[in-house]
Each structure stands twice: as structure tokens, then as C-alpha cells.
View 1 (spheres, helix red, strand yellow):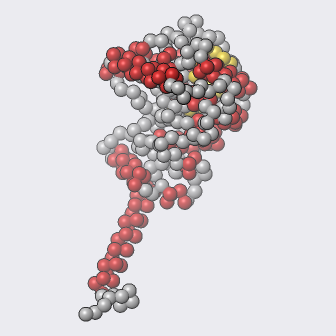
View 2 (view 1 turned 60 degrees about the vertical axis):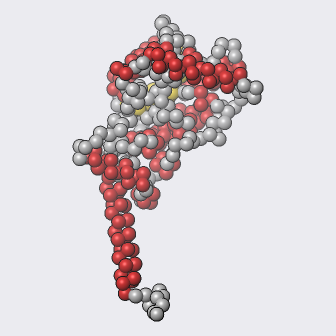
View 3 (view 1 turned 135 degrees about the vertical axis):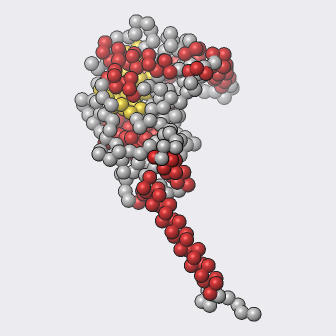
Length: 355
């Protein structure tokens, strides 16, 4: 019986191994070339180089190419509480070509990284930042990311190595979807400017169901605050993420119009008057106002009891208002920027104003 060894392997085994290695090499090269050609994350995007279709479900992978594109001289940053602001409406209100770069459940760190990337590639006419309570959490520096993947390499300087870094199953799937898009077989997940109506169609609105969501969330919050181990955050506790906001506003060109906005969540999610949480929220708003005023920003507070936030039928759930409310917010921001005065109807307060 002949014993095979690496030096004297039977010819058929040698042929099999060589064929296998050759096929693996060819397949790898094809995958690398396919992903590079389709450029699913817009590594080549920049002034004069169009971005590709936005096909990945994770906005954190899609928005860097918009920020680098040079195609938008105005932008919105925030979480899902500002995602419904239509760039077309904002453009009519303030001028310029807007991108909406608000990301679902984005932490202040993620928002800051995206805004910094945008400001490295653009001298914007208008910047709009949504300020949710996460901006004032004492542990914001420790809780920088969520369970969603955050590709930090896409937020830095793009190198040739990144063309290989993006070759994985996720990018292959995204590149395949991009190919289908170019063939006219599927639609992009997001518009080129990052905008999408992520709420259900208005025709499907169910007031009773929305009210149930609102009441359930309110009950959960009340139970958490009533638990024996609950300790409210004191008003004087640190707000480290606001240092990032301060640095971002300092990075913006002096001619940029900047608005800081507290989005209108349902009143059930706002702190009860006189509570420790209300004191903390007031301290947060005061510090944001000081930072905004120091940098010539207009600060507008929709996070108050108002005709918007006290009506259950304005919301899908405690955090997400309906599409018509987004139009009212844009109109309110335009009026607040122009006049510097609180809304006569009580939907917002102007905490700082820069004409």
C-alpha cells in the first residue's frame, strides 16, 4: 500500500488541491471586483463623483457617502425624532439643498462623528441638530454605540485598504442590491439625500392603537420611576456629550445658520413639573441654550406641553409624530428663525435667537 505525503502526493490529489486554490482565488477576485465596481458604501463619493444608491438597512453605513459627496450645503442631524423632516420642505424654508442625516436611535457620539465628517467636506449654509435627552446623559461617553454596527472606518479618511475592508457578506449583499437597482428591478431604501418616511402610511393610522402604545410606554416609565432602586439623575450631574456639541458648533463656518431643536415628543414622555427629572431636563436645556447662544445658534424647544404634544392623534407612539406634524415643525423653525419669538399658539419656545 502506497502512503501519500505532501512531497509525493498522487497526481489526482495535487490537481484537486491546485484546482481548489485556483477557484478560490478567482472567486475571491471576482467578489472583490464586484464590490469595488458597485461601491456599495460610496467610497468613491465626493465632489464631482456621484454617490451610489442607498441600499443598506443600517443608515450608519449609508450616510457617510452623503456627508462626503459635496452635493448638500445644508444638513439635519439627530435621531428618528427628526427623520420625518423633508429636505424639500427645509430647502423651501431656509434655502440650500438639504440632506436629512438623522439616524434611528443614534447616540450623540454617532451623530457627532457623522456631523464632523460632513463639516470636513462642506461649508454648509444651514445646520440643524436635534437634541434628545441622550445628549445630556451622564454616561454618554461610555455608551457611545448601540447594538447596531458602527463602521468607524467609513468616518475617517478613505484609503485603498478600505476597498478590501468592505468585502464581507454584508457588503456583497448590499452590492447585489445595488446591481438590481441599476437594472431597475428594485428601489433604493433611502432617497439620495437620506430621507425616507419610516412611519406607516397615513391611510393606515389607527388612533386606538396609537393611544395604546402611548399609554403602555407611559405606564412602563412610571413603573420604572416608582421602583425601589430608582435614583433620578441630579440636575448638576455631568453632561459630557454637550462638549462634543460645543466642538461641532465651533467647527462650523461663521456664516453657517445653525438651529438646535428639542423635538416634540408626546407629553407623557416629558418630565412631570416639579419632579427631579424636570429639574434635570431644565438644566439640560439651559446648558444647550448657553452653548447655542455662544456660537450664534437659534435654539427652539418643541419638547413642551403644547397643542402638538398633548394630542394623542398627532403620534404613532410616544416618540414618533405623524407626517403632517413634521411640516408644522419646519414651518415653526422658519418662523422662530425669522422672528426670534415664541409661537403664539404655544407649540414651541425660542430659547436663543440668532437672526
